[in-house]
Amino acid sequence: MSAKAAQATGEKGLRAWINSPTGPKTTHFWGPVANWGFVIAVSGDVVRGELRDPPPQRSLGPRQRVDLASREAREKWPVCPNPWDLAPIVAIDRYFEAKSSDSLL
Image (cartoon, rainbow, N blue to C red):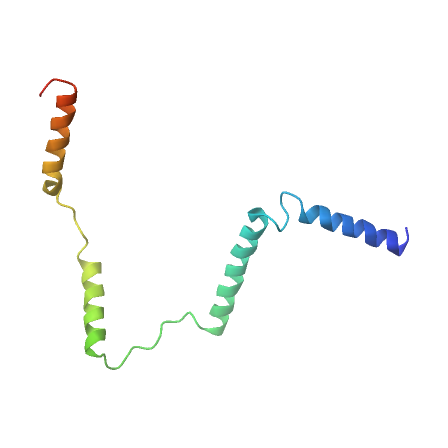
């Protein structure tokens, strides 16, 4: 096979792959490429030491103290929904359901 014929066959194969269901025009190609790109980027950060914790700040300004306190409060006190908040809504809903079926419970 001559060099031109081999090159033409290679171009046809490349075009066929580009237009294939798993080629670079689809998410089936770019999803794994992006995933491995993230892995490579994080490994580079680890090697350079960029993922270590930053040094502690020596002094905080008033806004920083308030921000830090509010973040700690959000983490320590999770929101617990009160079931009585929805009691009137549930009662009204049950009333209209019963009324629509023409039998009050």
